[in-house]
Structure formats: structure tokens, C-alpha cells
Length: 77
Image 1 (cartoon, rainbow, N blue to C red):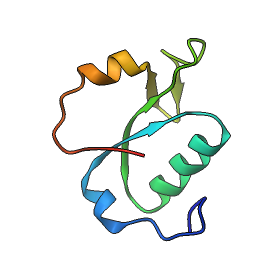
Image 2: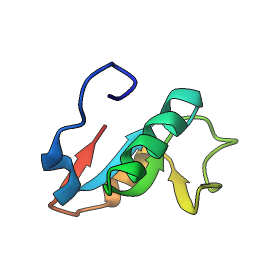
Image 3: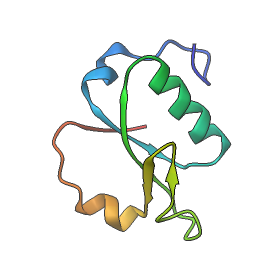
């Protein structure tokens, strides 16, 4: 079960995942996704103090930087 009390969709395991918001809930979701073998490639956050940092080895980018990412197998959660 995830933060919402639901099972994580197994289809996500085949996608490159972006987590929007890297506060407490975003970090919890990150851990849950890692536990099921999903690949989180980046965090996206509007907080300028968080942008450029890393969480668990995953970079935090701004929304503008995310738009530049053209990966076709991308899932925003």
C-alpha cells in the first residue's frame, strides 16, 4: 500500500518516474517506489531552495527544467 492506501500500479515499474514535490510526501513516495523496484529519475519542485539539490541520489529540478526533458517513457507522479 502507498501513501493513498492503494497498491502501486505495476505498469509504473516500466516507466521513468518524476515525483513532483520533494517534501515529506514526495520523499515517502520515493521510498515506496524504490521498494517495489520502480525507477525515479528526478524530483520536480517549485521551491528554489530545493532545486539543484539531490534526494537519495536523485536530482531536484524546476518545472522549466522538466519541460526540457523529452523522454517518451516518462510518468509524473
